[in-house]
Image (tube, rainbow, N blue to C red; front, side, top):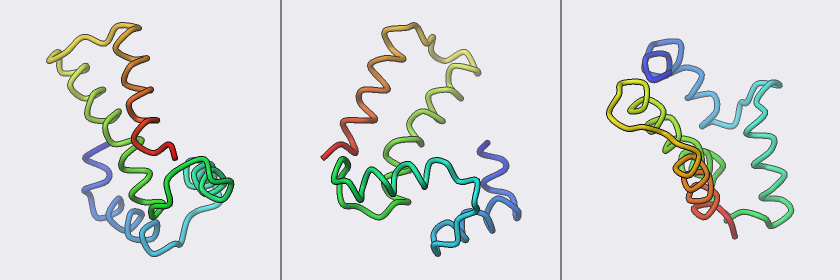
Length: 89
């Protein structure tokens, strides 16, 4: 995932998202926009919300795949709660 987002194609996708040119299939952007509209999450730019909620999971999964950490059910649950705490209003 990191390779894609740092490739020329991934950079253009990220640029479009940052400039508010989301694709129709952007489920997270739609979900976060609706949550923000309803006052459920902090009033931050959507790209910041996405980074706070999703980026930690990407790094955690990478470290799990590389064998640096072991993800058990408790850690997964606590991580999800921590990501939600980061964006919850």
